[in-house]
Length: 115
Length: 113
Image (cartoon, rainbow over all chains, first blue to last red):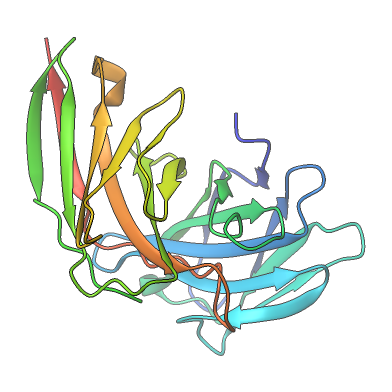
C-alpha cells in the first residue's frame, strides 16, 4: 500500500460525458501528479500540482483539467469523453526537495471505460 | 532528459539474481537514474535511485558505471512476485519540469519457477 488513494476504482461511462477522478496523496506530500496509461500510448505524464499550484504540464488534452485543493487532495476532470480516453489513470505523490521529487508513490489507479 | 535503452524482455529463475541493464549514454552530470516497476495494471512502484555511487536498499541494488553511461538494477533473490515491467528513468532533480517522469517501454522481467 503506497498510501495514495484513488476513487473510484472503475468508471464506465458514455461518449460525450464528463467524469471526475479523485486522488488523496500520502500524508505530508505536497506534490500530486496525474498519469494516463493506455494500451497504445504507454504511461504518460499529464500534469503536476504542488501545494495547490500547477507546476508542470505534459500531454494533457484541453478537454481535461485538474486542480489541487487546500487539503491537498486532487481531482482530474475529463469532459466530452471519447472512446480513446479509455485508460488507466494514476495519481502519484511525492515529498518536496531536490532529488526526492522524482521518488513518486503511485495510487492503485482508476480504470475508465468509455462506451 | 537523457534517453534510456532497455532490453524488451528478460527471464530469470526463482531464487537467482536478476540483473536488468539500462543504457543512458547521454546522461548529464546533474541527472539521476531512477528505477520503477509495474506489476500488471497496478500503479508503478518506486524501487531505487542513484546519482553516481552504487546504492542498495531493501528491494534492490543499483550499480552505476564510472562514466555513468549505463546502470544495472539487481534483484538479489528474485521471486515470482518480482515478475513485472521494470522502467529505467533518467531525470534531473530540479528545473521547471522536475517531477515529470517519462516512462519508456521498460523491460518485462519474467521470473519462472
